[in-house]
Amino acid sequence: MQNVNLTHHFLIAMPGLAESPFSRALVYLAEHNDDGALGIVINRPLELTLKELLERIDIQLQHGERAEEPVFFGGPVQTDRGFVLHRPLGEWQSSLRVTEEIALTSSKDILHTLATEGQPAELLIALGYAGWGAGQLEEELAQNSWLTVPAEPRVIFDTPPEQRLNAAMGLLGIDFTNLSDTAGHA
Image (cartoon, rainbow, N blue to C red; front, top):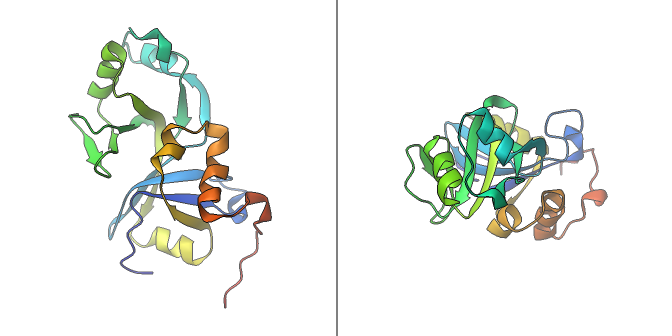
């Protein structure tokens, strides 16, 4: 499984991860290379709204129509740090360009622009991220912990959070309820 690049793919947690922070998780991989992988869980809204988050960091929201947008649990690593998965790319201080249209930004300047200008138009704000060291994700894939499928932006930005896992499974033509928690190897 060496030299596989799963950047801009979804990771779908298999039932065997039921006892982990990734139970029924859908992860968007923003980066995957020889050094490891970084992703954001995109189907776990927290009981925290955009307005509440911005108030906590002393940014005044001037676009009230976005006030109730949820903030997501992005993963178990650095849960006190924010990440914004968005399109279009824009010009932010600390962005990781994932594709020609999607970026992951961790600098506060994007939140200021969101609060004052309502941009970027399409985004997902998360606290924390999912991270894997060199070879760790490949090992988990070999153990059948994850299914992978190329990501579709509509699942991230146009699908309600509670439907994202099933939408990603649909990209594979699989129903989540048909998955087994035991793995077979031929």
